[in-house]
Image 1 (tube, rainbow, N blue to C red):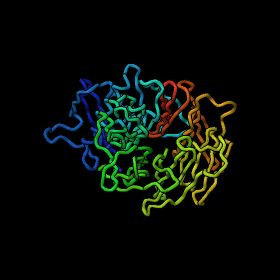
Image 2 (tube, rainbow, N blue to C red):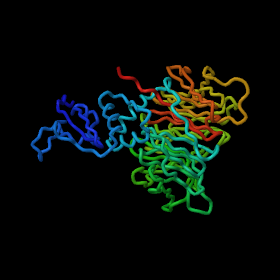
Image 3 (tube, helix red, strand yellow):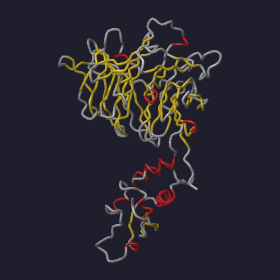
Image 4 (cartoon, one colour):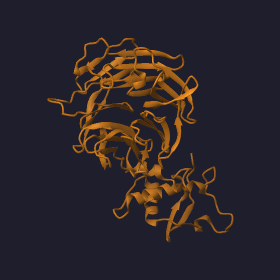
Length: 448
């Protein structure tokens, strides 16, 4: 705990004089520009080159004084008030200079709560109606995949140089951190391209590729669904030309392949739609779903002994449209897997029982009457004890032990939601018709 500081500090910012205290500046944290003004015990460092008192020393900063005034008030009160004559992007750039971006984000929107979200903004993309995936970044930014292009946005929603994969269709993307993103893509016949690569989010440059080796030979392959774990291991479904069907594992720091789970007979791991790492059990959920395949396969893979410790398939079961699984997600706290069909009925399977059956519940159903001509298949997400499911032009929120419907997010513009993602205390929803994505945020709490 830092002590209460009584030292007064004077700044000359762009010709305007500001006076504050060391206690206020200490709120900026050690990694800020102001953090360098303190010693290791959070005492204000005096200038040995002068004999005047610290309060009489002016620290000159050649920056915008209006933005400095706003950021100084933020350190004083924890609240962010931006006058109408100050462009937000200018303030954000000034916050970056002072190392206060995290403070601005915290004041700009509050901790994520699916039942308190409001539509903060909608962003129009450049390509008409071909958006396939959206992924939230760790700091409030996102990326949007359109065919062979990936458009990257920072937390201010300013677009960075796009990532162009030269006509290779993007299958999935995952943020490693705020500076790096992994993208998987289809193999191009006749060319040793496709697979996966690590790209810079700031300039779109390829940093390195993730190769698949079989019998000591590097093979071309199609990279599919992605996931990673806390040990910096990256997982991807892989589909090659011969024996490279299964789940590959790489070191996400070096890009080196460290393992491969080959596809067992009768399964379809190489074409998996979804991967999810389960931290508690150290297993990987692999789901191959309709309509990619006629039948659905869901399994848990343990790479420690190369075994499938739990599995489910609808092969041999009577299939109706209401029972086709469109997405799946593991919920470790309840030892279950949640699945959803195209009517947004939720189903649950017990991970503690082999050969578990789906317990369907229609209490969550929102769809009534005729389905749209071109519906988007529902997607699932689990975030901090809340379950989210997209359906047509809305995202439903479920909570409680019985997963009761508690709220619904809807924007009538843009058509059906083809994908959504949660991260950086934001929910991003990508619409299919008008190539527009929505940003949903929780309003920040006011400080009294």
